[in-house]
Image 1 (cartoon, one colour):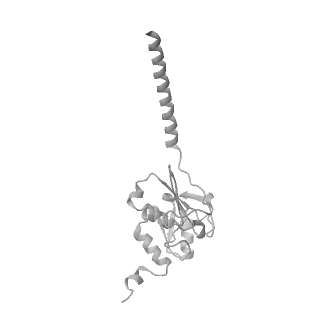
Image 2: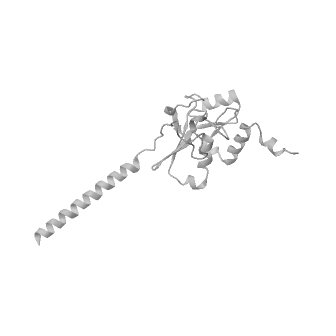
Image 3: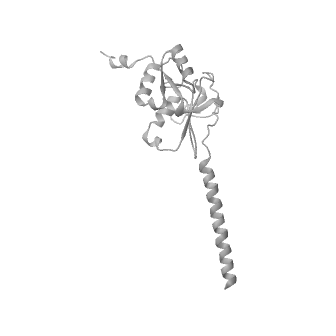
Length: 184
């Protein structure tokens, strides 16, 4: 009986150690940072399905534990993020810092946290379909682009669907005032 008790104790101890180690590994995975990844020439936009590298301007990505969603523009990413079901995800959003990158081919070395970026809307810069929002890590760079190309500087929390629609209308040469009076 004593041998049976000793054997059962060892099995229980081994099981407890195994579960403890498994929990440590799980905690480590939970704490791993959600880092941005490089864009590749074959990547397609999660929203529109277009090849991302076909467009100039800053791109966006939503990084989750289960993978990465990539977008052909910051506006596409923000439009996706503003959908209520997507805001519930535990995703980290990234955009290109255009203060340290070229417009034609943004450098993936300069992907920044989208929630702390400065956004310039209302320029005539070319990008993917819809609105073009230039993104910057530093406010001075954003203000410099706005002064040079027109537009205004916004923060992440300022952007909603109406801002994206206004920016899209401006990109296509039609202001909201012109849209409201079309056909009159």
